[in-house]
Structure formats: C-alpha cells, structure tokens
Length: 93
Image 1 (cartoon, helix red, strand yellow):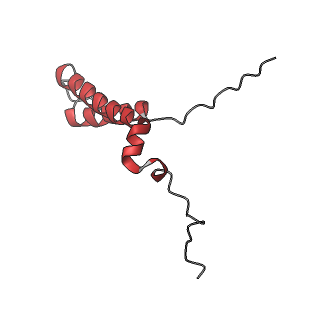
Image 2 (cartoon, one colour; image 1 turned 60 degrees about the vertical axis):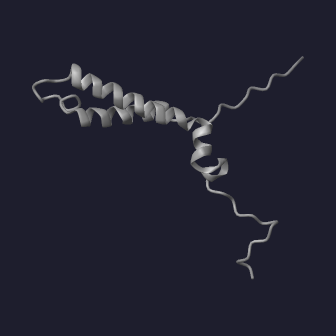
Image 3 (cartoon, rainbow, N blue to C red; image 1 turned 135 degrees about the horizontal axis):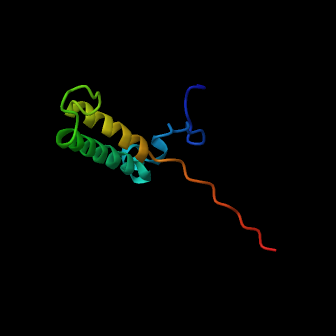
C-alpha cells in the first residue's frame, strides 16, 4: 500500500513538465533557441554558398551542410533561454 499515491502526496514533476512540456518551454523563452538555430543555419549556409571557401580546405565553409549544422548549433547556443535573474529588493529608508 505504500506505492499508492494519494491526492495529498503528488510526485514532483520533471523539470520540463512543470511548465507544460514542449509548448510551455517554447512559451518560456525556448522560441529564441529555435529561432536562433534557424537564423544561424540559414546565415552560415548562405555565407558558405555565396562567399565560402572555394578550394575545399576550410572545414566549416567548404560544405554547405556542415556550415548550416554549425550555424544552427551556434544559433541554438546563443538563443538558449537562461533562468530569470533574481529581482533586487529595494529597502526604503
């Protein structure tokens, strides 16, 4: 009987589930990570296609697929949501 969960003892939700799963993550700032990945992939693949390395010796810009994956990774890292900063408490004197 100790395995039964009563209404008083609810298990703690997973970190992503606390805000409503994927849609909660997107509403909480995750859209910036997705937008950053899309913009990064498009930007670096366009750079690779129009300007990139013609000899094939440049690792990132010699291949459009590699450039777009790298750009998506950079955009994802730059757009990843960060935890909110704690609010400063002002004390009136």
